[in-house]
Length: 258
Ligand SMILES: Nc1ncnc2c1ncn2[C@@H]1O[C@H](COP(=O)(O)OP(=O)(O)OP(=O)(O)O)[C@@H](O)[C@H]1O
Ligand SMILES: [Mg+2]
Image (cartoon, rainbow, N blue to C red; front, side, top):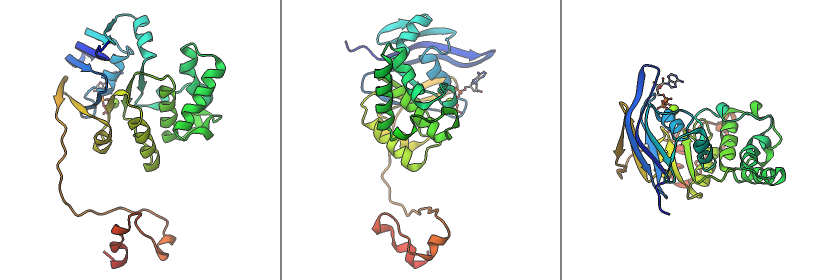
């Protein structure tokens, strides 16, 4: 019963003549929150697409829950348990309204219209998006689409999450809400992010994609003391009135003119 959730064995892939990977191996075990890092163009998004069968490798094998995925039927089955949040939400959302987009997965899994719709509303509410249910999806802002796309993935109640830059384009409040939600899920995940603070909060293991190879990485943080500054951006008129840092210990600089 304790199969690895995902295994990649000797995967090779390229676009046209240009190779992206030569022989990638990876195992994701239950409880692992794996950060997948690497520079722009290293192949992180491509790797996630290979995992769920949206692209097919030139060589090698993908196993989900111990079973090899060989054809579209195998990948289709695995995709109902392995939810991919695309880097670009426009690739993920395609229904007229938000509620339809979030209910689409559960409906596709065989749930009744009513149950899928209830689950979609519940999932939207868990991300603070209840007011968005009737909105037209393609008219949402980038950050709103990002959150709705995540709701559409979570509504499928996956066993594994593949998150391609989940906090990209989100404001501070939305980012905090999303991180709290993800921390509370206790789901295995592969997380692609360029934001180290996001990785620090979510991941317990890391791998690096570099020059077509996937390398195990060590995560560590250095405690250090430093002076720091806070950027405050607020309307000009507020300068005339008192303004302060949310943490009273940080208020000195507002009054000393530094
Ligand atoms: N559809 C495509 N056709 C041809 N080349 C592609 C295609 N998609 C991606 N590539 C190329 O493959 C390489 C890997 O792209 P990928 O999007 O996987 O990188 P990434 O690590 O996700 O980068 P980023 O951090 O910028 O999102 C890049 O060099 C990219 O230009
Ligand atoms: Mg990418």
